[in-house]
Amino acid sequence: MTENERIELANLLYPDLKHDTKYYEEKYPERKLAEGAMVTRYAPSPTGSVHLGNLLSAFADMVYARQSGGSFYLRIEDTDQKRMIEGGIENITSVLHDFDILPNEGYSFGGDYDPYIQSERTEIYQTYIKDLIIKGYAYPCFMKEEEIQAIREEQEINKTKIGIYGVYAVDRDLSLEEVKSRIDQGEEYVIRLKSFGDPNKEIEIVDCIKGKMKFPEHNVDTVLLKKDGTPTYHFAHAIDDHLMHTTHVIRGDEWVSSLPLHYQLFQILGFKPVHYAHIAPITIKDQETGNIRKISKRKDPWFGVKYYEENGIPIDALHLYLATITNTNFEEWYLNNSDKSIEDFHFSFDKQAIGGTSFDEAKLVNLCKTYFSRKSGKEVYEETLEWAKKHDFEYAELLEKNKEDMIQFFGIEKDGPRPRKDISKYSEVKEEFSYAIDELFEKENYSKYDGDKVYDVELVLDYVDNHLDLDTNNEEWFNQMREFALNNGYAASPKDYKNDPDSFKGHVGDICEAIRVMITGRLKSPDLFSIMKILGKDKIIKRIKMYENVCIK
RNA sequence: GGCGAGUUGGUGAAGCGGCUUAACACACUGCCCUUUCACGGCAGCAUUCACGGAUUCGAAUUCCGUACUCGUCACCA
Image (tube, rainbow, N blue to C red; front, side):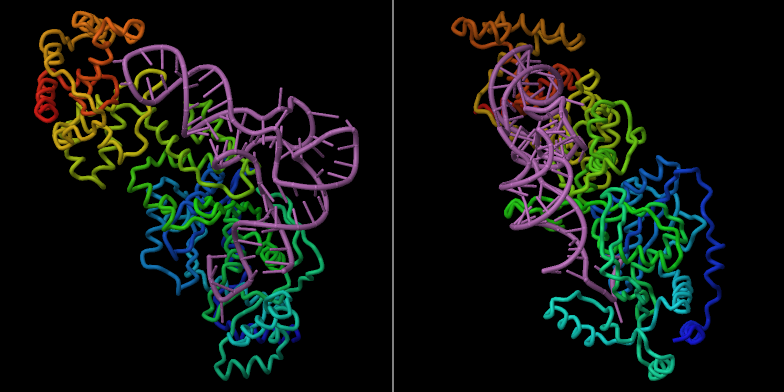
């Protein structure tokens, strides 16, 4: 086709476009940002639920834009109407809010580069396609599905490269007359790239994370516009990231193999190339096979985003985990800078793992425990209450009813430089602190006690009635406890007992253990005296009697 | 099959030619501290970096092969 014929064809295909490419170029000028500012984007498609991998890339987008004083925007890639799921878009934005990974621009966040949803940008894509047709870089292709399938099979047998290219691209050089008549006959068509690549030549592409990579040039006539006139991912990526002036495309690793295509698209469109940063997917080592595999929602519940909310994993702790897998040196930094937050850390692409990142659940749990240990009793109370209001209404009520006590319970052993580490999720608080609330304690009814001893109720009752002083400090209390132990034939310290076991019935620890079991129903608990102080004498006595009734027959 | 990438302990991983008889964290084990647990302290946990060869005075680190794993090869993103 001559240039004039191509112009005629372009006008035939797209007669009603309101603007030309120049218009869009002027409408969307570059942002006025400081040198080095990064513009990133999270560009999900509403075809399924959000998972940890999505969150990880959105997190990286946010962090890089934020630290460079750039912009992080949300773009909805809804070009596949068939796979759209109901509520998919709302789900994306609500997850972003829930997990506090907030774009400062984009779909539902506002901004000057709208529309930020691809289904509303059809005319823009068509405008650029029209331009490519005129330039001879794109053409309508009428091939039927069966035809393509047949070619594919043939290629498989011949072990040649699969795809529509070279001699297989039969509609590549159709005459204008033929195109016209096929359209008149109502034949459907897609727009394909007229690729000029030479697969014998190599191109080198530098990825911010993976470094230099060499590929053969792209030579497949990839579909740019589908039958329904909407763009494929590749074309939309080129147009949108150019017009929205993305500086760094941070996306999943599954895209690296289309890099030669994207590179070529930017070339023929005359766009300034963007930087790419391909993140390796989160993987897991399968327990049965020992192979690394992609995570499955069924086998790996933590992969779905719901898991975190339902189990009550704090968002900040999850951020910490995302940060540790985003930059390999984050973990150590955070350990040495416990007073600082993620915002103070400087992320960089070359500290990003190149290979697959395995999910380490134990590490997440530990991070959560550390997170909780650094929270005051009041903070733990408030956060747990908020979580319980959504997931355990009964517990939420109990928490509200016992507010002051609970704040104190949650604060035990939290004030020192080495705070207590026991909880890792909001969902564990109820069980962990069941002794703090009468209703729960009674329901539990000493079922948590897993020892086989029977304790001396009389002794403990005597102690509580006649010797226990709750208006003192921990040290004073323990001294009195030692004295009481001694007076009753128990050693004042485990060491004394060890040195001369025959002279004693036991040691202080044994008496403490008896008290602990009676008032908390378990062998392990936070500091005993602190618990007794909050409980008060009446409740302590009540529980000792309860123990007698339940455990002594 | 083509193309691209990865392979370091129980786990996540650092390292990117000599400072490594392999950092750090988590997990686990033992001891210490201690009224229990937790915290904390100490110690143990890869003589070795998938395998084979090459380069080098010197390699986990560079190169070449082999194996395995992952990604991709749609009018899905």
